[in-house]
Image 1: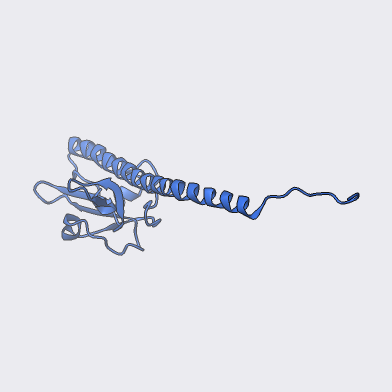
Image 2: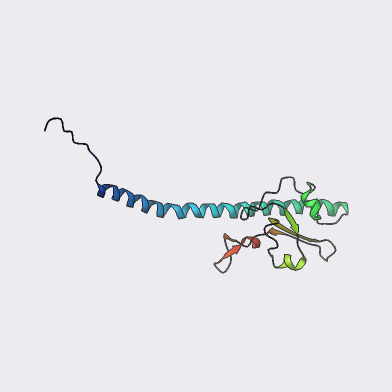
Length: 157
């Protein structure tokens, strides 16, 4: 058989085995990566909340010493007076901005117009003691567990 060359190739069975192995690896790896992005969103939300709440606490310290209202108004919170950083969008909804909510909404951490603002803010400097609440305006579950073993909502962080 001169002139006839045998070409080496993979058989159908070998190709199927490789595809099955890749499918198994993907089934194992993908959920781990999906969980990592949820953990990152929870951490980003907690970080933003901590930064804003820390800025409000610093404002309060200065305001009390100077005899002013203990907590900033919404406009003072967002105009650069209180926050020395740009408030990022809510990591879960991607929506930017802060909106005022009522005391009742703040007490239950109600989600209000989630497409209009990523964060909710309530302040009452006339209450005794004065009250301030800042929270994420989103109903999604975070990856942070609560005391019952379930997961806290983003608005509960």
